[in-house]
Length: 399
Image (cartoon, rainbow, N blue to C red):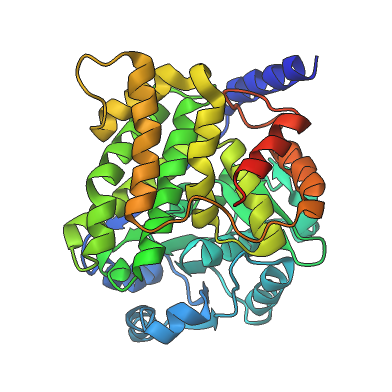
């Protein structure tokens, strides 16, 4: 009965989604496209803007050209650089306080997934000052327009520049949850490959596998559309053709550019078709132990795909063809299994471990509950898991 309820919920939500407003960010693309943003901000009539980033980005100096450009355009800017990995409620409230105190009129998110999530959390609070962040947990709880929002990703992974989600961590309860609402889709996104050339190899690899997980989970789910499938297929093709090159040759701008496109397309796919059990598990590992999201997804993905079995063979065989790993004459099942092996090999080639260290067994029951609450009834997963099945997955991802 519960599975029937979940499927009915998902079908209803998919139907209702047709009537929602899905904003497509306007893109500034290519080398040095970052330098075009200050003039755009000025043209939008904004005089004071909050820039959300983290200390690592600030220390690298990646943000300096943006700040210099804002100064030349006589735009006051307030920088919040205290975002932590897996941004917390406290992070978001602190940045929100700066926005209000300084009378800001828009937000620039500059960095990887953490600054993006923090900035989106701020945007949600601005839109709904009457609600606290935990009250916006889930879907369609914001429903009021956010201020002008400019997203500048410095990794090629989260796709947050195209998505509805802000992922928030509660540092007291170790809960990590998403606020999902189409109003959180940024108005503008800057895809400048020069911003990713200084990424360490392990960040390139894990964020790239994050993008792959987005594309795969969106494709194998039951709420896909012709449009989201095309986004996922193209993203998978780009990732398999470019991620290892970007990992081994960080200065390769063509590979960096293609990975940014892949992350964006995967974001466009999953923000409409949703993710699945891989993400539900990964979010608990981030909440409890601070496991980087891309790393968690990379490790978990092949285990979950194996577990789904024949329910996703057809979809995986199509992804295998897009990835260039399916051989002519192979059966659907053979191609599907070949795709899973290709994911495992890509992880291995980039020195990504095949297990998650540090999971404490006494935490697993709570993580199982939270993963199931996140996944059901919203995520249109190929197979709706029960407690025993979810518990099994936590067991097999451990050393």
